[in-house]
Structures are given as structure tokens and as C-alpha cells.
Length: 325
Image 1 (cartoon, rainbow, N blue to C red):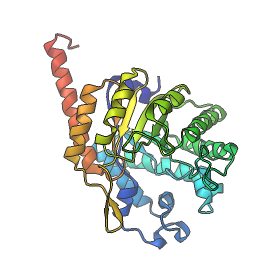
Image 2 (image 1 turned 180 degrees about the vertical axis):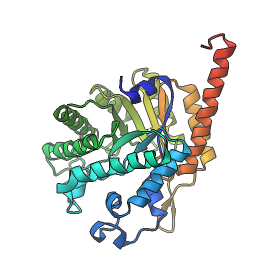
Image 3 (image 1 turned 120 degrees about the vertical axis):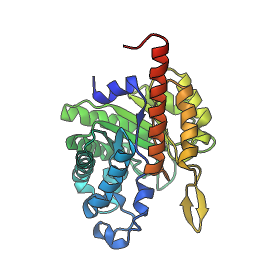
Image 4 (image 1 turned 90 degrees about the horizontal axis):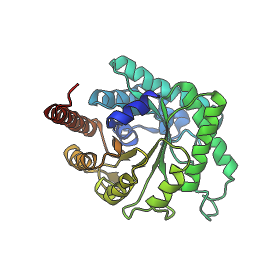
């Protein structure tokens, strides 16, 4: 069995935290990005690999079991916006390399998770701009990205921050097509993002999204971004009650607050850890936790301590029951 899936069956795995909000701490300027394309975070893999590796290393030191590649916007359609679509494979291979190097330099093994964010379109929408694209173009965009991540050597593929369940379905099919072409089989994770009312951007509820995606042979279903853990409570409960797939939860550090035109995330490491601890202790199906926007290495460090304490408590209970091996 794949090592990631084997670990998933025996313990709760810890992902990393945010990449985008950590990059902003460097206060990047226009000339820090490739071709001066401000906001082109994925290009920092080439222009400032030291920044990206430092962020990865901080999460590894904090105790993450899994590190996501800095490829949230490295599907072909998003890269086309910056004139880099023909380099999709290279962008994704480079990102995997940075995670691998970071782990090697720290001296800890981690699972490299290939991150695949939205295409920038909403194929289910009737919007004249966002819905004006063929399904084949979206499929090809994710197909090429998945190939790059697999060629780079990632351990699992993560389709994340899904806002349109049709696009996610296409992305899943693209990943399996890439695996078939490259004759490699990797675990596949799908993360949708819900608003505070439990709906995706186009109104799809968690039940419908789960039913659609869980029937596509994915390995993990998750929630990430958009809200803090409190707003995810009812959705997490419903998902874990299905008693089918392992569930992943990666919330923001609370709901964003507007401060001088900037989104700020104010939930402390202690606060987010307390809520995720409640989830982990209550639901056996919750097998992966981590953080999204606004979470830092300090948030992950606190989550690591919580999981370590929980493991010790579990061992103690086993010993008391005479189950020690």
C-alpha cells in the first residue's frame, strides 16, 4: 500500500499551513516576481526559491507530516494569464523539487502533496466570462499540471479550494488520465471550500459535493479555506457520519477581517488547536488536519503538540486495557 494511505489508516496526519499569507510577510515587490507580474506567487519558485523553501522548512520544523507544493495557480489556464502556460510541466516539477530539498536539508521525511487550485473559471456558471470555456480546455489544463507534479515525484495529488463541483469532477478525471499516461498511481484528495452557510460558491451543499466526488474513487475528501473551524462544524459532523472516506479539515485562522483594505486572520494557534482537537477526538473519520489562510508555523506547531499528546494518551489507554504489544 502507498505509504501515505498506510499512515492515513493508522493515525491523524498533519498538513502544513498557509503559503500565500506567509509569502506576504516578505513584502514582495513587483520586481520580485517573474517578468514583474505582481501577485504571481508560483513564479517565486524560480525567482525566490529561498523564500519558498524557508516557508516549507518552517512547517517541517513545526511538525507537518505533509507539505503542499507552491502550485496553487500552476494549472495551464492560470499560467497562461502570465504568459507561462507552455512551461506548466516545469513550474510543477520545480515546486516538487523545492519541497523535497527542504525536507532533505532539515533531515525529516515528509509527504509531498501536489497542490492544484481552481482554473479561474466556473464551468457550471452561466456567467459570460467565467463560464465561457469548454470542458476540454479545463481538463487539459489540469491534465498537464498533474503530469508535472507526478513527474516531479509528489506523493499525492490535492485538488483544493474547489468552488465548482463540475470543475472538480473534471480535475479528478484529469488526474487519473495523467496517472494512466505516466503509469503511476497516487492517492487523490479533493478539498471543497464552503461559505459560512455550508455552500460552495455556486450554491452546491456539502452533501451534494461529497456524493459526486466520493463516487469517483478519490482517497480523501476535505474542507479547506473560506472560513474558520467554527463555521465548518456542521459540515464536518455530517461528513464524518458517512463513515466512508477519510476526512480532511484545513480551516483559515478564523473568518477574514478587513483592516485597512487587507484581509486579516485573527484566530490564535491556541484557539484553532482547541477546535480541531474537539473534531479529532470526536470523529474517527477525521484523518487529516492542517491550516489554510492566516495560519503560520506557530499554528502548526500547536497542532503538532496536540496530536502528540493525543497519541500518548491513546497509548496509555491501550496499556491500561492490557492491549500493549
